[in-house]
Every structure is written in C-alpha cells, then in structure tokens.
Image: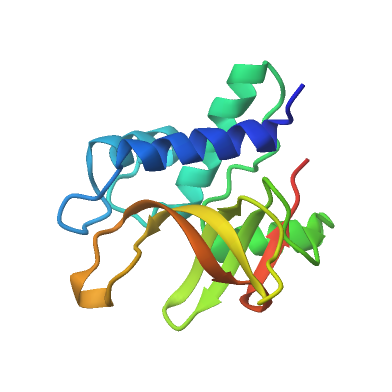
Length: 158
C-alpha cells in the first residue's frame, strides 16, 4: 500500500498535468482559490505551503489514513516546526516536503525523488514558475528538475 506522501506526490503531479496557473500572477485562480479556501479561507496569499498541505490532505482521504502535514502554511514556520519536531532529513526522497531559502524569502515544495549527482533534485511545486525570468513568469503548479539541495531543508512527514 502506498504511503500518504507517495499519494500526495501523485496528486501534485496530476495537478501539474491539469495546467493549474494563477490569473495575472496575483495568487488567485479557480483551482488556486480551492487550495487557499481549504487551508485557511484566505485568498490572495502565497500558496506554496497551502498547495502541499492540500495534496497531503487529499492523499490522506484517498488512503483513509491520517494527514501528517501540520496546518502550517508559512514556509519559515513550517521549517521551524519540522526542526522542533525532529522531522528534518539530510537528503531528499520521494514525498519529502522541502523549504527553500531564496533572495525573496522562503518557499515550500515537494521532492519527487532523490538528489541527482549534480546536487539538484526533482520536485513538484505550487506558487512557482519555470523557464522564464521574473517579469515574464506564469505562476502555477510545475514539475521541476533543478532545485538545489544545499539551499533546502527537507522534511519527512511519514
């Protein structure tokens, strides 16, 4: 039987295949509003952590098991919770949640596999973009292969 993390990854990958994108890069859109309402009934906020939480919640319902993802949506707060609860691991694995530090703050995503020899790892993420610069971005749910492991804290929920 698959774990809730494995099912959460499949759900996230399915969302990426659906082509979930923001409307005008404003942290809003029909599907994105669903993630936001599920999380805390607040629209227009950063939603990377809300997306990961929603995926885990859907997976828990699907396998009829507990949802290990805490109801913490801010990346820094999730990272602090994970450290306090000894949920961090040194390397990414399938279904691990990660918090990445960047110039603009912190971001939450989900690892879809282990680290590559070049130090990067594959992921699926919401509230991000791919293949463009910031001005020309289209925020949404993307499957990526270029997250840098050394910039991340990995959280193993199950």
